[in-house]
Image (tube, rainbow, N blue to C red):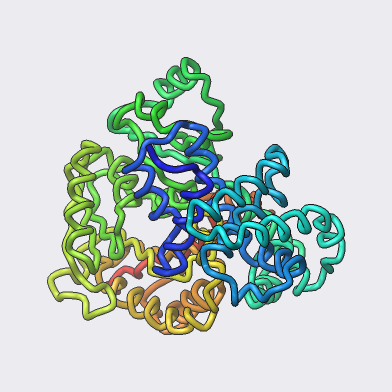
Length: 448
């Protein structure tokens, strides 16, 4: 049996900051190795994700109640304070006494007993002053940054790109718990079978517009319940499902997915093709290609193949013009999936400055694989025009052999109050998906 969930949360948070890895990976690894009750799993997950999401907020509030610089605290003590502060500020159902007392106990369990009185004093002060501290936060970018724990430069980027109203909606959304979103494996089940199962298990859910095989579960759900449905589903956010719907793959076609790992879009495309045709997946890592093929076979998909290849390098001549549709879902900054990977928000935008160059190289090389009359589709899971609109507009200007293609996902445009166009940004508060960008092209037919 693992230790107290609060102590485990402190340990994970320490490891994250030392290794700069992602919280969902560290948490999944622990939950697979250790035995927790459903309540312990829920608390542990909430604390790890919550502290990561709200780090700027927590550190500001703690600094206002602390007589020492946070930078001079022992890393373990700082994480104990963050875990305690998160409970005081964002978990109303946990009594103040429990949050503070458990933090004090954690100092002793984690060999920081000398700091027990300090931790108790800081958290007690925070509880007394929290209402006042919230009230002092302004509505300027500095205040919004602390209130929503989002760096100022990202807020400025969104303000300039999408306007104040949409930015405020995004800021409120990035700290919400992401829903569990599934794609039903249409090779092995039907929406009717899912409805019967959901009724039996008392699962509340809804589907996304125009995606009959999507399932958005309302509220949390234990994995053991979903396991009863077997291999008839897999996890896939609605944005990726809309991406495949926009591509509109047809039975018997040849598809290429040039940056395919972990393979979800290819799996969904294969089902839309009724497992009839051919899909070539590519990834720079050979082991990920092996995983794609294994997972495809587990889902009953036989038309997927995978090869290790750097999609930014020269496209091999035998692949030129061989595919009816090509998916180009490029590496990106990930600003559209912050609520699933909270660590992304703390990266400086300067770290992503070279991405558009790489993205354009991949798009250019992928375009060579499209046959005349075929479809090329570009996508990212970020909310950054430099990686989205600017990349595809440059491609359209420099490649007259391609024509922008109106995307066949009308409901997504309707939700934004605009007419269908050749590219679209999916916004979490509007579409109920991750943040995402999709653009489409058609290769012109050869002149007669």
